[in-house]
Image (cartoon, rainbow, N blue to C red; front, side):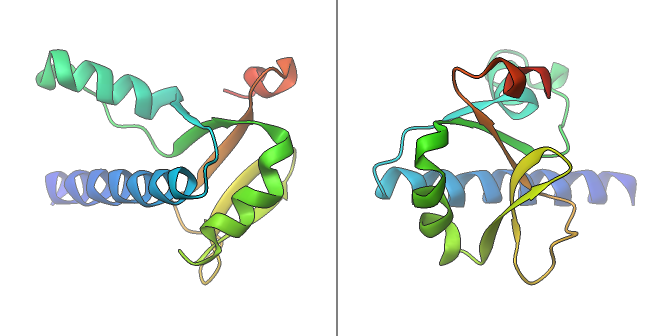
Length: 115
C-alpha cells in the first residue's frame, strides 16, 4: 500500500513537472527545475537506489515573466496564486491539491531563502 502511494505520487510529480515545463518551453519562457526534484533527477541518474522523493515541483523563473507563465499554464488547468509569501501554480479545480509548482524568482535573494 505504501509503495503504491509512493509510486503514485512520483508519477503525479513528474507528470506535473513535464506538463508545466513543456508549456513554458512552448511559450518561450526561461525556467530551471530546482530544489528537491532537481536533486531527485540528478541522483536518480547516478544511483537510482539513493534517490529520495520530494513533495512538490520548484521552478526558478524571472519575475517579469509571471503574467506570461500564468497564461501559459492556464490551458493545463493551473492558475497562479500568491499565498502567505509563496508564489505557486495550483490546480484550479482543486487548489489544495498536494502537488503544486512553487515559483522561485531568479536573482532575488528572498526567493532563495524560501527553499
